[in-house]
Amino acid sequence: MQSQLIIHLRWLLLSALLLSACSTQSPHRQPTGWHTPQAMEYAQPRQHTTASMPSGHGGSHKTGKPYRVAGQWYYPLQSASAYDESGIASWYGRDFHGRKTANGERYDMHALSAAHKTLPLPTLVRVTNLDNGRSIIVRVNDRGPFVKGRLIDLSYAAARELGYTSQGTARVRVQTLDQSVPARASAKPPLQKAPPSLVPAAWAASHGPSKGSIFVQLGAFSSRVNAVQLRDRLSSSFSDIVIQPRQVATETLYRVRIGPFEDMQKIEQTVQQLQNIGYDNAVVVIE
Image (cartoon, rainbow, N blue to C red; front, side, top):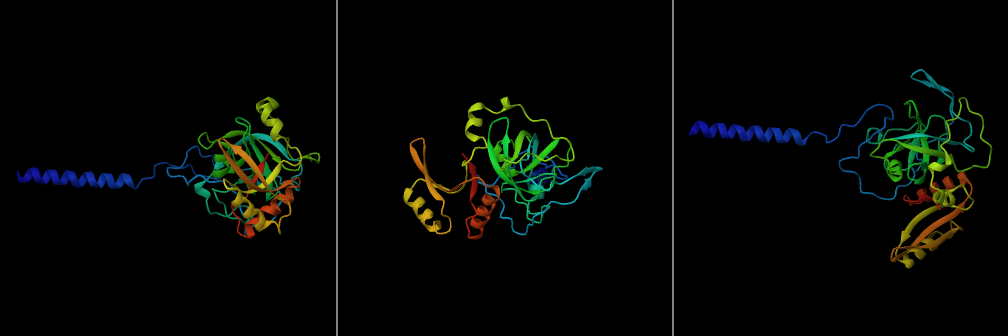
C-alpha cells in the first residue's frame, strides 16, 4: 500500500513538472533574419486600434550612398517624386520591435511604417493591396527587405490594416503621394506594373490620385459636441480643420480632419506637428 502511494505521488510530481515546462514554451516559433516575412499572428496581439505613423523622434533625412548586401548592390534614390512600383510586400514585427531603423528612429511594430531598399528616408507612400483594394499611407524609415522578389517590408500594423498578416505576403502597389513629376530613371529596370484589372474599378474611381482626397484624421465621434470641442481647440493652429459627418448603419460619426492635402511634405509636417503637441493617434486617410 505504501509503495503504491509513493508511485502515485511520483506520478503527480512528474505530471506537474511536464505541465510547467509546457507552459513556458512560446506558442509560435517566429522566423529570424533581416526583415523576413512572418506568416503568423501573435498569440496575444495588442488590442486593435487605429494605427498612426511613427513620430520621427531620433530620425534624420537620409538618401545614402550605394550599398551592398549579400553581394547585391542597391542605389538609393535622391528623390521620391512620382515613384510608382508594383510587387510583393512582406511584413516584420516582434523580432525588430524597439530596434533602431536605418535613419535612426525606433521601429514600432504597432505604427504604420515600412522598409524599402532605395526610397529616401523618410518618405510617405501609399501602399495598396491589389488583392482586396485596401489602401494606407505609411512612413518609410528603414532599409529592406533583402529577400529576392520583395519590393517592400511593412510593419505588423500596416500589414494588418491591409489584411495579409496571416498570408505573410501580398501583391501591392507603392506610390509616393506626388504623382505630377515624370519618374526618374533608376539604376535597375522597374518592376512590371500590375494590370489595372487587379484593382476593382469602383475602388479605383474613388481612391485614385485625385486632388483634394487626402486628410489627416484626428478622431471620429458619435457626439457632435465632442467633435466641435476638438475642432475649436485646434482651430487656431490649423485653419483647415473641419468636421465631416458620415452615416454608419444607424449611427452618425463626426470625423475631425485637417485638409484636404495635395502636398506630401505638408502632410508629414502636419502629422509631426500634431504628435509634438500630444495628438499621437492622428492618421492619414484617403477618400
